[in-house]
Length: 212
Image (cartoon, rainbow, N blue to C red):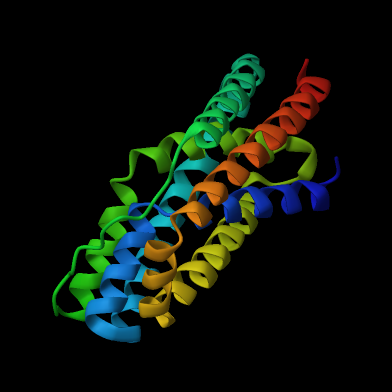
């Protein structure tokens, strides 16, 4: 798998994960419903900022691991792939349904952005996801870890802004769709689960060939 293929796989994986309704999407949806497009887009930018922090520690952590403890890299990569398989399996068996959206009330733009960033940073699944996934896409043969981290961060930010921004701009329609079509969100989650398992198997196999 070359670098371009790796980036496409990362893009598809991140897109699938972000598209699954969760606390971040609900935060954008709530602000879009209560404060309009401006509040929803502000919340989106706050989540993008939080995602940038996740990218930073994911990149630095992987770089330190490869530099100072390379022997641990392959076991961590395999463990991360196994975790992705487990998450994929739970998504396939789950019934993800958006049931309610809590109103956020009118508040300042700065507070909305701050709360959005905090929501992203307090999401434990995001930390585990970064720890599990980033070692599988940051490779020495692809060049500078800093440059790779910037690219992964830009991809993540672009996906976040596109998906969450779309929800913010069409909040009322998105709410009706999610509340009125529970089976759609269930099958979305299951589809993402299948993709996560396939991606984990591919990256684990590539990692084993490179680092075994």
